[in-house]
Length: 96
Figure 1 (tube, rainbow, N blue to C red):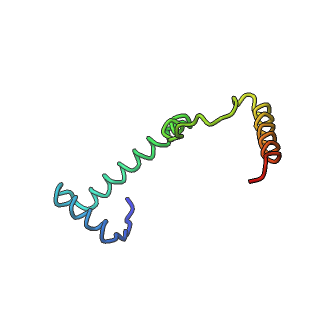
Figure 2: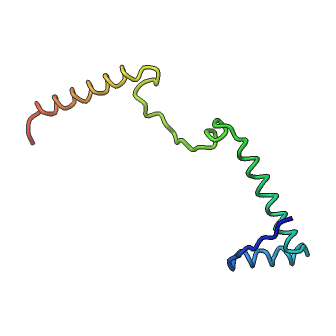
Figure 3: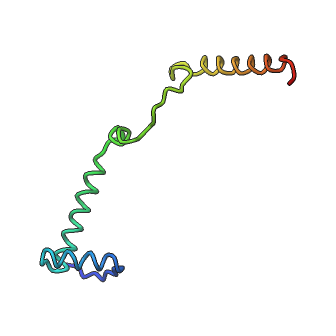
């Protein structure tokens, strides 16, 4: 069994006192329980697959793609051509 010295800020010290008052646990028991809870949470979150994390992301509404991802070259060509056509028609328009 190891001995550790731990420094607690005021907030952590207050939380520890509240835990002790509510549970009547010794300090060492409260800290051990807290360590076990954090360990379990780390184990649980490390088991997440990339897909689990992807499902939690807020990717927004989307719907702004101009073509399917399977044919990006054709979509890019189409977008560039449309932009070039838009500039050439704006350049030939009467000046304001």
